[in-house]
Length: 142
View 1 (tube, rainbow, N blue to C red):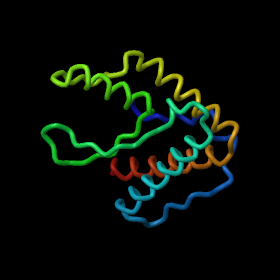
View 2: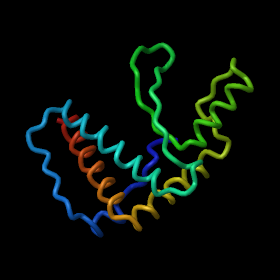
View 3: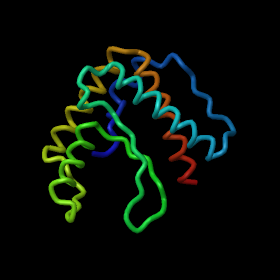
């Protein structure tokens, strides 16, 4: 599963009460703000979401052959399916451990979108996160 959040293009204009001023922040500061925004979005979603299987859980992992630790955020059912697969056959690693991954990803994005439309705090947090990520992408293009 990729980014667990849906594209906000359809709701962007509906609610934007907060003006986000990025200013002259360093790229490191911007990345910290994105991580903080991610945490707010995931925590808010998890609090509102009634289906615990689709709660977003973040884990730090290091890929084989690398020493770089990365944070990966996925639905709880993804981590559980991956764990069950590892228990079945520890010798085989697969990048697609969830059998119905596309279906689950679609359901998760629908849940996030629906809750964002019902909850202004979640929508605001998601919009702030998107603005920060776009600014980081813009800086990388330079």
